[in-house]
Image (tube, rainbow, N blue to C red; front, top):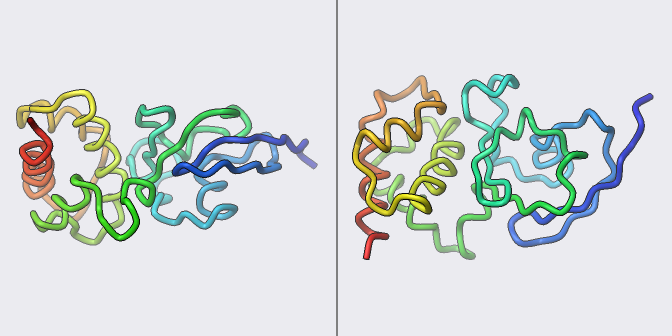
Length: 158
């Protein structure tokens, strides 16, 4: 039986204390323990990007991160981007641009786009392509995703 570890972190602004096996991933904690199913389980190898969340503001693969190694961090999932019933500017741009597709990879794409636009207020299409290059989508040719991120940037830029 695996040793359990008590860990406390903030998820979408709320403090959570969980007792988990040392080998339990952040993705499993988010989805199974906290009920935040926006983080998708794709490849479980850190390749597809479906499970991308923000950990202390930086994009991270929740399928690779062990929850026990994250005490005190601040995690933001796709659910945490909205303010009540109001979508974040990036979420709204994905909706407005028709970039949602099947929706499976989109939470990771939206998180990655949010991180990009935090660092780069006016990204070029090449900047956007580079930023989402680790997020795989089987439904789209990425044109609508790039359009959505450009739209969000134009709405957020001063």
